[in-house]
Amino acid sequence: MIEKNDLLKKTLKDAAGVFPELEDILLAGTGDRLGNMPRDKAAYRVVAPYLTLGKALEMWGINEELFFQALEAAVPFAEEADYDVRKGFPPLVALLPCGLRNPFTRLFDSFIEEWGRRQESLIEGNVNHELSYYDYVETIDDPDSLPDLMITSDINTLFHKRFQEIFVDGGQFLPAPPVLNPLFARSGMVDPESRYSFIATNLLVLVADREKLGGRSLPKRWEDILDPAFSRSIAVRGEEDFFCHSVSLPFYLLYGREGLEKLAANIEGCYHPSEMVKIGNSPRPDSPTLFIMPWFFAKRIVNTDRMEIVFPEEGAFTSPISLFVKRDRADGFREILDFLRGEKLARLCEDLWFPSAFSPESPSFPADRSLYWIGWDRVRNRDVGEMKKEIDCIYSEALDRERRRELTRRSRP
Image (cartoon, rainbow, N blue to C red; front, side, top):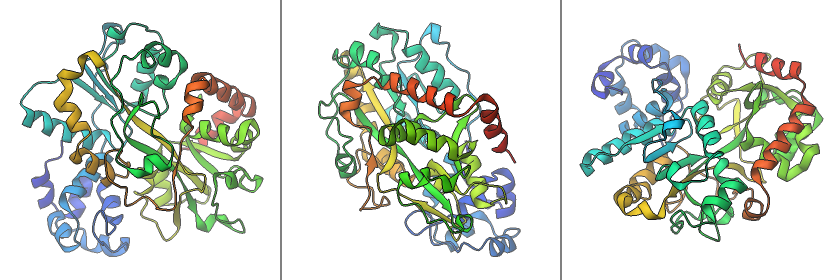
């Protein structure tokens, strides 16, 4: 938990000593989010030893509340003890993307305090824990083995055929409420059968290092980065034995096996998005030319004279934040549901570049672009879980073990 008053009294230099992420956030200020701060790093460092954070926020017109939301999103929580899946989970489980977990937790805690009732919950953002949870969900067929309210990220196990047939199609969950944000409708994300409900969405964009493009054109479409001219030029999220399905599934659906093989050939290295931000802010001679990364992280790159965010014409890849509430337990969550669908959370999501289903608009998202959704016909009529297995096999054939190790090694300075 960040002690705001103490931090506001510290000089910029001392505050950055406590929270190294602070400098990047201040330098990334924009008119619609964090003021109109000049992007001159050298000038910033001249004043950093004697200018307090509080005075800097005031001078540069930076909204204090939004600044601390961004800082809390950037600072990882201490690791929490995992629940033992064999003993079950609390009634409310929220598995959130990086960047949203910390601010969501603070807002939710404030709501609980105002509500005046205790709610046992697990709010997590650790990928390893998420994977263990989804593996657990794959094994059960009893609704009582699931939390009563689940918030999950990505096109995960809850979109697989088995879970649909046992739980979703069986009417175990509340129907989805109306979606307010027209971005979701024009992107085809609104479930025509109202069985899947979204709170917001994480989304993936392309970030290009213009100085490294050389004679290559700035990509405008996802298809453009499959060109052999971008061989070993692309940064993706992944590890030696894992490539992010939020990237590979859309590429597979758009361009088939051949497209995925071309993408594999063009991967330079596997990175966590926070590593991509560091490289984007201080590029190395051997760093990637292109980055596929969440919009939240892309907005933390302050080197905008060199790095450009691209919203591809096919649509930014969407990784939805879904809400499932057991129909027979819904009455006990009425106030929490009002919070999850309410204005405060919607505004928080929009402020952190996670378009909200319950916001009347997403003003920062380009009006002439949409999200790429995999399609409800595919969710209903094809097994997303089986498609992921096909994708993993394609990667295994396209990238042998030594090449995977090379990609992982190259992702480290």
